[in-house]
Image (cartoon, rainbow, N blue to C red; front, side):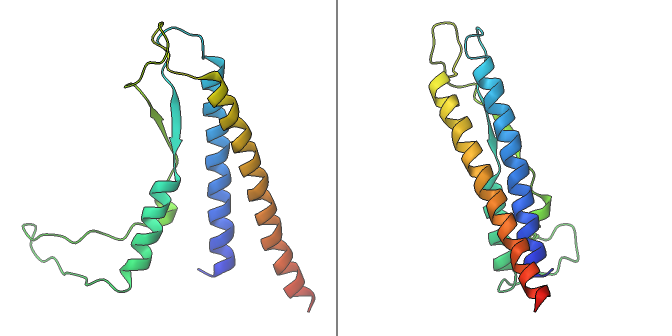
Length: 138
C-alpha cells in the first residue's frame, strides 16, 4: 500500500472515530440530568497506535513457526485496518447524588474539541489530495 492510500485511509478512519465521538458526547450531554445515566466515551487512538507499532516492529521481529497446537504462538501482527472505534461506558464513577456521572461542561468542551479535530482532519485530507493534484499537473 502506498503512502498516499495509507494516509487517506488513516484520515478517513480518524474522521469516522471523530463522528462517533461527537455522537457519544452529544448523547452524554443530552442525558446529563437523567438519574443513574453513565457516561460513555470512545476509545480508538490507543488501539490504532498499538496496531501501527505492531506493524512497525513486525519487520524486525523474530517469527516463530508453530507446528503443534501446544507450542507457544508469537503475538500476531495487528493490521491497522482491523481497528474500530469502541464505545466505553464508565460504570465506576458517580459525580452526582442521582447516580449520574456526566459533567455537562466537560461534555460541551469535548464536543468543541471534537469539532475542531474534525476540521483539522478535513484540512489534512484536502492537503493530501492537493499534493496529488499538483503531481498530476506536472
